[in-house]
Image 1 (cartoon, rainbow, N blue to C red):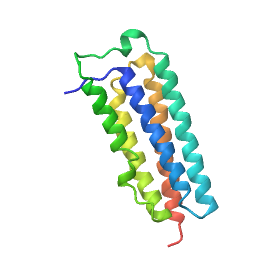
Image 2: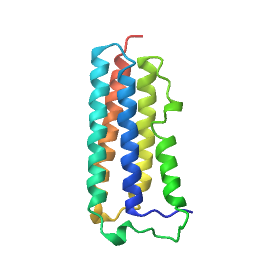
Image 3: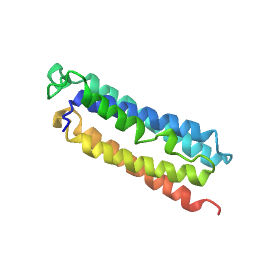
Image 4: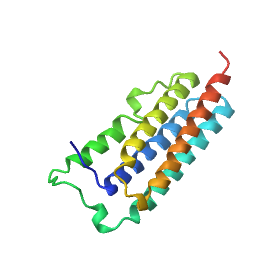
Length: 157
């Protein structure tokens, strides 16, 4: 079992948001419709803002909150979180960018995976060090799903 410091959680959250922004920017280049390009651009910018929020939260941690909660000389818990953030959420190899429909479906799944990641990691964050902000970001990610689902439903078949 792995225990994570709040510092680890915020660092991985930053990585997850970077991956999201990168995904949306890459997907934006693959769609033709201006409305869908604008949607993907807006989502990329939202992911950028989330990354900044997590970076700020991480910078505000005290020294004892940055230290690991278990003896981990090989940094395995950090590597585990990085692998989760890098490979599970917004992973390039899992995303079909052959059509706008497939991009939106993949984005919805990635947003769901991000929510699951944040819900699990929220428990490792001290209450006074960002739980409320994490809950806000989770709600925003849920809003992304609603927005993406609406656009997916409105696509011409």
